[in-house]
Structure formats: structure tokens, C-alpha cells
Figure (cartoon, rainbow, N blue to C red):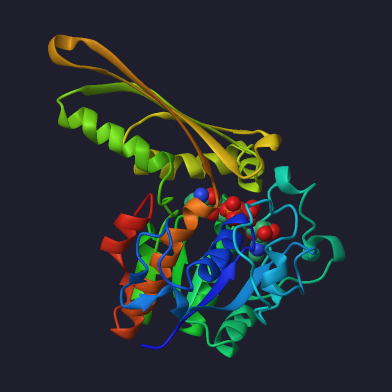
Length: 329
Ligand SMILES: NC(=O)c1ccc[n+]([C@@H]2O[C@H](COP(=O)([O-])OP(=O)(O)OC[C@H]3O[C@@H](n4cnc5c(N)ncnc54)[C@H](O)[C@@H]3O)[C@@H](O)[C@H]2O)c1
């Protein structure tokens, strides 16, 4: 048990909050963090060893600088010193959707440069001593996620899938990680405090009271790249699948890009149902949070659980931890 060496895939807003969070909580106790120590590891044990992106504006920069590079617009809450982790050109595949194309210049696409192969990514992971690969690719990047997962397997790393690609839900990928004796966590990280948690809490409170749930919705608005990307209906479909599982009800889910909100997210949650004697009832709730910091706490728990499982020689899907930290298992 030494350090938790983490590679990040996609140096976007979530990774910005995560990297800042490690600095913010390095000193010990501060509000907003559920587990200062998790699975035997403190926040100060978490190290960033590698970073992959495809946006030309971020490539070659140190991770400590790339996190501030537009279109990132997550709230700045901690100074980050030079980390000595250059952002390297990763595997493009289906990472950049059509709605993001004006805001992201993928070097592979614009220069005709060949994207890295999973073997080259694996070599970089091995050379940097990475233990855990943390996937924060845009929603809809199924092929890219699978190629990075293959690289993680080749390099002997655990894989934490923080976005809605189907990986932990795939029997094949579970088997591959189990056979390799490497931990897998996923899919799609829950925010420590977010719309999924509140939606699920309302569903649980109503059903525990005997209410029969009818319709409902979870309507989201925000001004970060995740919302740009979610304007693509096919990419939204994969987010919807994990959100409906996480919320525990068959609600309508929608997402609107509202540029002036930047990294703030507004959620309108509504549930309809029938109570005693068939009496109709409605519950409506509005929540506003900074979107990306709310994901970082659970990401920090996930990487520490993954490393602890590696220490104990436990491989395959970490089902219990995934059920706690992820929207869909
Ligand atoms: N609270 C939250 O914000 C939250 C919670 C749970 C899950 N998520 C999920 O996390 C993911 C990331 O969210 P974000 O807000 O950081 O998004 P983002 O768009 O800010 O960041 C994504 C990053 O990935 C990079 N990228 C695109 N294709 C790539 C590729 N092929 N290889 C390497 N890098 C690539 C982009 O250039 C960008 O820097 C999304 O799928 C989102 O749904 C977010």
C-alpha cells in the first residue's frame, strides 16, 4: 500500500474539479468531502501519473495548466502546482460528437495525425507506473472507452468508468477484467450530491409510503461541454439509460444547453403518484449545483477502492462499490 497512481482520460471539467480537489483536501479536513480516508488511502495518497485528451489546445500542456484551458469552465477553487504530467494525444475514435466539433479541435482529425493505438496507450500507462485509469470521456464515446479499457488491461491497470458507455454492464468486459485479475468499476459516476441522488430519495420516500408512482420528469439545464454534447440525441440516449436506472423511476429525462449557466446545473424533478384511496399527489423540486465539483468526491472514492482491491488481488467488477458510486451497474 503506497500511493494511488491515476491516469485521467479526458481533461475536461470533471477532471479539473478532481485535480483541484486533491490540492484542496491535501491538508486534511475541510467541508464537502465525505471520506477523507477511503479504503485505507488518504487524499494525499492520490497522484496523477498520466493524462489523455484529443483537444489540440490541451495537448502538450501540463495537467495543472490544461485543466484551465477552454472550453473547460469549471469553478476555480484551488491553486494547482506544476504536476509534471503532460497531456498526451489519446485515442480519438468517437470521443468528439458533432455538437462539440466547433469547440474542440481534435488534433487527430485536423492534422490527419494517426491516433494512438491501445498498445501505445498501454505502453504510456505502464511507463508512468499508473495503477488506476479514470474515464471521463464525453457521453456517447463507446468505442473510445472500449479502446482505453483494452489499453488498461494490457498495462495491468484497474479501470473506473465515470461516464455512460456500457462497460461494467457488459458481461464480456466484466469477464475480461476478472480473467486479468484487475478491478472494474462503472458505469457513469453518481454525483456526491446531485439530481440522481435527490430523484432516488424522493422515489424511495414515496414508495415507502405506499404511493404508486405514475409519470415524472428530470429536466436539466447547464452551460458546460457535457450539455453541449447532450444536445446530440443519440448521445443523450446513453445518458438517459443510466439516469433512469440511477433514479429508480421511469421518468422523462431531458437536458438543455444554457451557455450563461457555465458549469452550474439546474434540475427540475417532478413525480406524480397515487396515495391513499387513489388520491393524486405531485412533488416538484428545483436544485442548482456546480456540476463538476459534485462528481469529484465519488471519483476520489472510486480510485481509492480500485487501488485497495488491486492491493488485495481482487479483480473483476467491484459490484458493491459500483452500486454505491455509479448510476448503472
Ligand atoms: N457531475 C458531472 O459533471 C458528471 C457526473 C457523472 C458523470 N459525468 C460524465 O463525465 C464525463 C465527462 O464530463 P465533463 O463535464 O468533464 O466533460 P468535458 O466535455 O468537460 O470533458 C471531456 C474531455 O474529454 C476530451 N476528449 C474527447 N474525446 C476524447 C478522446 N477520444 N480521448 C481523450 N480525451 C477526449 C475532451 O476534449 C474534453 O477535454 C461525461 O460523460 C459526463 O456525462 C459527469
